[in-house]
Length: 392
Image (cartoon, rainbow, N blue to C red; front, side, top):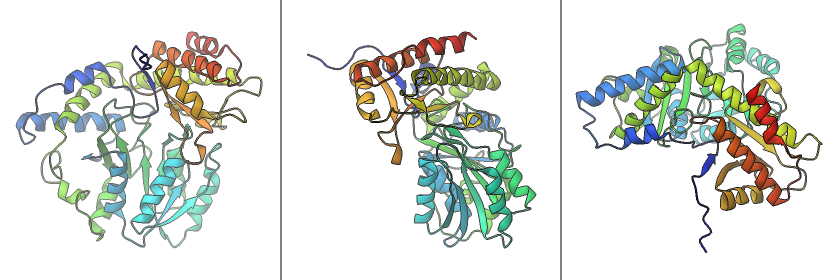
């Protein structure tokens, strides 16, 4: 007996995400010389398109890497061993960025936060204002924390820096929000934005990016720490940028097509679609746990709920791992698991990128089916609640 389920897999992991057929077809072509005029034109188009998504006129660099590479590029260019940064705790990924910084010899102060409620911005502003000696060289943030399903108000952090007249740089990870949730690099005063290819940009994993302000470029030029692969100065000098090695030609083929898709729909419409699908997902989860015994939304701060991923707390005494195993092995539905201390305690529903109402309803219905099969307590009818949300 072949135990592998048939039919197309419903992929609702919060990263990587579904790759549209149009993007796959755009990448299904022979390689071209990355020094050719044809490829330089594609690069220019992609740089301009991603800047429109980031809403920035600043400098943009791409890398052959995952988003973690772009994290390291920001750290390596801006800081030397012994420099101090402040990382706003949001969850697993803020901890990962902190670990990377520590391994590079950077002194890290963590502004602690409740993972279910999010950082207290007023108290963060007090901490920034208290740094009168300006020991803190930068504030590092994760705009959308994939592990907890929570958004951080980055613009409010810039406001706190400005009110304190603090010169620290503001760095923001937008890996799981770019192309899914409105992001305004220039208007929010972000000095370095970190992004990746595999989520809202609807591409395979393997290309990362950083948007870099003039202030950050100046800091990088003054920084004497050794670096090579990530060195922004070495990447300058060839329009629109030089790659440290071979350029990821096929990723650019795909990116050019994904940018076309985003702009055909219109960015505002893209964000509205993500809001609509996220609200339907939350309606289903709230219904499943409406008796107080079933699954619950992990995020407890309503105005910080993510529109790209929903994190769901399991009922007491149950684990998300058997549920996810039934979902994938029996029903061909891929759900995200808990990360770090949340492992086994939550599951995550990704609703970003190439997704529509039928795809989401299929995910929610199959999640209900998997919960019933697994013996998870829940109130039936979450799909109906999602339909009501979408119809309204």
